[in-house]
Image (cartoon, rainbow, N blue to C red):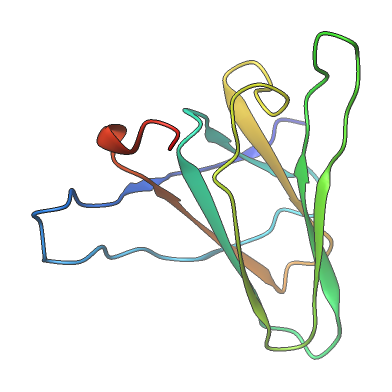
Amino acid sequence: MARTHLTAVDMPGALDYDGTVYTFAASDVANGNDVVFTGREVIMARNDGASPYTITIASAADHLGRTKDCVATLAASANVILGPFPKYGWDAAGYLNINGSNASIMIAVVRLPASWAGR
């Protein structure tokens, strides 16, 4: 099955003080989630469940075939911010793949401004 796409919300630039409104979406446990990947995405996740669950950012093989996923375990009611991730080692055909172990893992994606450019 195809992954469930998430939409990244663009973070405002340095002179935009209006803030950023974003919403969380439940993890698609059966199919996984993904987001269009620029290398400027920050993943925010929270666990709305009563038990610990994990969120995994799936790595992509580098030029030597190496992978090393980013896995975070969230206790009940815990939050985590992950990223940004560089394109090298994470770009899966233009997407960043995200997997939650339970639908209680809620995910939001914020994209840093282009001026950030991998600092």
